Amino acid sequence: MIQIGSRSDPEAFVQRALFEKCYKFIPDPDTYLDRWFLGALQEEIKHENVKEFIQWAFFNRGGEAGDDEEESDEYVAAYETSVGRKFEPGRGKAESLRLTLDPIDMLHRSLAWYMCVGFVDLLTYINLLRAGFHFHRTCLSRFFTVFPFRPPSSLPSGHPQNTQPTGTVPTHRLNPQPARLLRVVLATHSYGSVIATHLLAHAETAPMIADIVLIDLVTILLHLPDVAYNFTWRQPQSVSQHQLWYFASMDMGVAHSLARHFFWSENVLWKEAVEGRNVTVSLAGRDLIINTESVGRYLAEGTEDVDNERAVEIMPDVSEEGGLLVQEGWKHRPWRGKGIDILWFDNLDHVQVFDTPATRRPVLEAIRAYSANGDNALGTATAVDEGE
Image 1 (cartoon, helix red, strand yellow):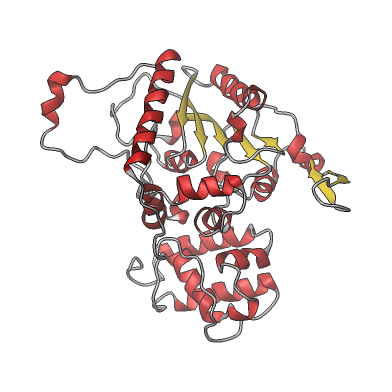
Image 2 (cartoon, helix red, strand yellow; image 1 turned 60 degrees about the vertical axis):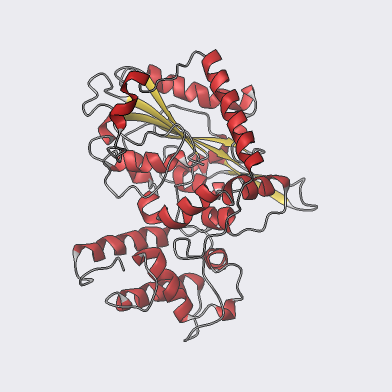
């Protein structure tokens, strides 16, 4: 469907480079396959099952193998090396998670639901006014100039923009040459990190981004199954998981956007994309969406004082009788304001960093420090919140 022409074209090299980069960062190969195959028995994950998953993950399609069959077999062999066993020939009963091909699971909302949402929007509007923000819109005298309705001018990006952001995320350019906005500090939360990926990838916007603050980001190591599995397939158990499932995963707009417009290979953010910038990443130890342990290790790898970061502290784990808790050094390294800094909140869940002044403070201090940096021309800060 998407693969056109011979696999000897330049796209083949791009796909292979992507696979090699993903293959390098698979912390636990068995868990990796278990999650992508939705907990299927190992004996049911056979050669054709893995090949089918690879066709979706790296060639963005389903169906039978075509010109990419030889390359797909090479990737299957690489996975066999990773897990230390050969996959049986043929096809088993295992089904893999293929987000953009699987049926969309969603819930319809009642009129009362939308009335509640409207009331919350009104409260938000009032709070923003009280905080000093001003709402801007097209004046009434120019209202009829928007007819007939037409698509807005999209923000150009290095890859097709397949996400559907809402809320505070800009969807069109207001000024083709923003002369006053020379350098900005980009702060994103959760789904907003997808927007950061595209801003950093585009040649016109990337030079405008000085330093970055990424809070609960979902785009690092996006090839791991955690984000897709936890958001779309996990059966909720705890209160927070039920909250995520009902208010986000089952929302019609969110579910459709993720299932039909979210292509992980276009939205993944690699560490190389932020090189040359100061970056602060806020991670929650109990995040119910992201594998923050793996993300933290990936970001800490190769940074300054790496030997100290690899030092570990072992203490009793109060959550498990007789267990031991390993605390890695990178979780507690003081904020430096140089290179990649990680703010680790051991007992927090996704979005809970905003709940109290004590947890908000280090994030806000990072933004203020970056904004005050003389390298940022106007000391401005731009916030991109989650799109859900």
